[in-house]
Length: 151
Image (cartoon, rainbow, N blue to C red; front, side):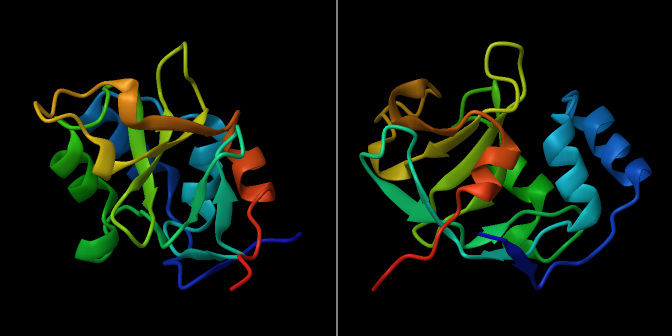
């Protein structure tokens, strides 16, 4: 199914993305960089996704963007959650319940898409993978596998 990205801020020049990468010390995976350059936020239609093991799922409420509104600002989310999510992961979107969709930014997880469940966060709030679940092996697969949730 073809995914549409609605209510995005549009083109984001590569210099802005490079500035973000330099300030965070994180090199973003190329598939996500391409998406961020083209859309810089927005929400997808369809928006539903399943975990890789098909045991559960959710929906994308909004993709995060650079220099966009407070509720979808990528840098704000990164700063808010930096001590709560593993350093190997980077927030790219959120679901309606306040959970995060993350992308791997280190060699072992590079480009993989994950779901971070805040309800299952450990009491000591030390970031670990106990509440993180694989969604897709790469960003393009994630986008291409989005589906309409039947109500």
